[in-house]
Image (cartoon, rainbow, N blue to C red):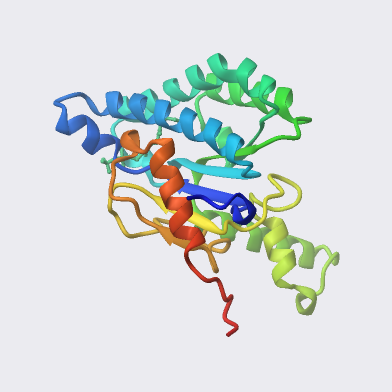
Length: 240
Ligand code: FPP
């Protein structure tokens, strides 16, 4: 049973296996992403019900641009249809949406829909739903280093004053953007045992859970199992 008193504050998810799910059924890859989007909606709802404060999903990485144009544009079409059709519901459910990653490089209609979603949900006080889009952990760190370097050059910051907190603040999860604590739990579906450039800095002490199901098959029950797995572990943060 899940222990409501020991819920992770922030859960991050690598939604892997949409392509394989579709292939197993003889369907195009995009049908897998469509099924993945439906699974994602249920996980957003369920996170809210469980009282989780932050949910981050890896929807599109800086490496995903290497996929076919048809697949990339299909994923963005799905994204636009998701945010447009679910905006009312997100607002009603008091969900605050944030984006991790430089979404200005996405197609124009996606940028517009995302900005509307950010604006309409910004004062909500329930679950914060972070969507990682055009996100890469190394790219995020490069941007942080660059920003700190500019501050040093402008005389706003001395190199010896650079702390871990200052670096954290410069990330997409930092205080001026998504303002999200490090995830206690990272879930990756489909049996792959990698982080694939996701939350590299933030995952330093995260518990990792790898459910052996493809993302479209990741149900709220599977989600609860992953949380139970997390709760059964003892977190020591390098101490004893
Ligand atoms: C990984 O599966 C999934 C993605 C790269 C895309 C994730 C997208 C969605 C869940 C749906 C769209 C939702 C939004 C918010 C854009 P894969 O394609 O790598 O699967 P495979 O490893 O089996 O090929």
